[in-house]
Amino acid sequence: MTKNANINNLLIPNVSKLPKHSKVESKDQQAANAAEFKSLLSDHVVKKAVPSVPKLPKEKEIQLSIHAAKRLKERNLEIDSGEFFKLKSAFNKLQEKGGQDSLIITDKAAYIVDVPARKVVTAIDKNNIVENVFTKIDSTVMV
Image 1 (cartoon, rainbow, N blue to C red):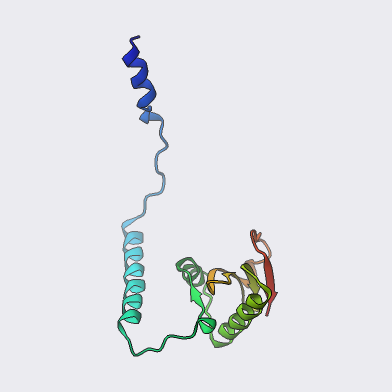
Image 2 (cartoon, helix red, strand yellow; image 1 turned 90 degrees about the horizontal axis):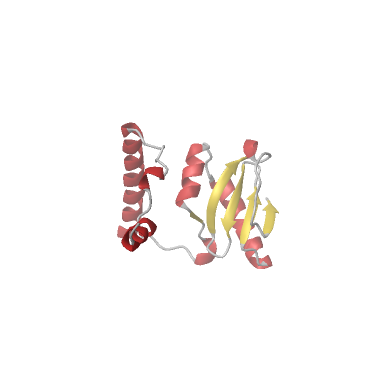
């Protein structure tokens, strides 16, 4: 072999051994994802476009991550006013105690939260809490 052939073998990988993508979304799933994206986008645009809606003070806001919103929908969980006030109270307690990445457990669900950002990261319904392992949590509060 020549010197150039050795160099080419080192620089050009054998692409025939690369793993193939096994997940291909159907057209129905793609359409559903597009519709969900449009809905989320329009909600965001409407909220940004309406200047008359007063912004809540930082200590009263609770945000949902996109992942948490998706999990709530998948698991048929709804944050009603009672659940909202439980979460708000839990966030305030966790902030006072210095919580960062925390677990909030209510009678309906468990929520993994980012306390400084006041954001719900994900949600698990009450029936599935037992089988889950929660990692990288520095504090837990039950309300």
